[in-house]
Image 1 (cartoon, rainbow, N blue to C red):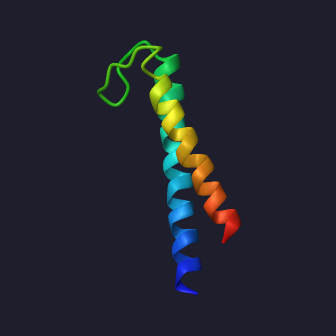
Image 2 (image 1 turned 90 degrees about the vertical axis):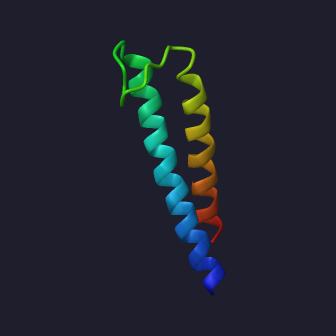
Image 3 (image 1 turned 30 degrees about the horizontal axis):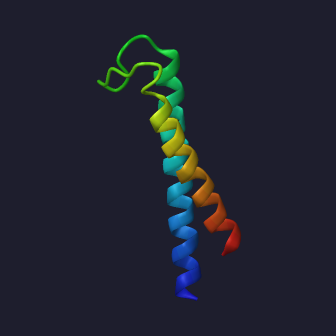
Length: 66
């Protein structure tokens, strides 16, 4: 029973983190100014988008399987 609760918690955490990173990537892509003190070019914003997508999909998969 504890493993199921841990999976749900970790899946929810990964999902929220993925959403936050995806939002950062979108704002960084659309903005010409520094975002959260970081200067990110258009091509450099692809990396957070991919990482956020992986976190989001993994989190949703963990929640749905538990």
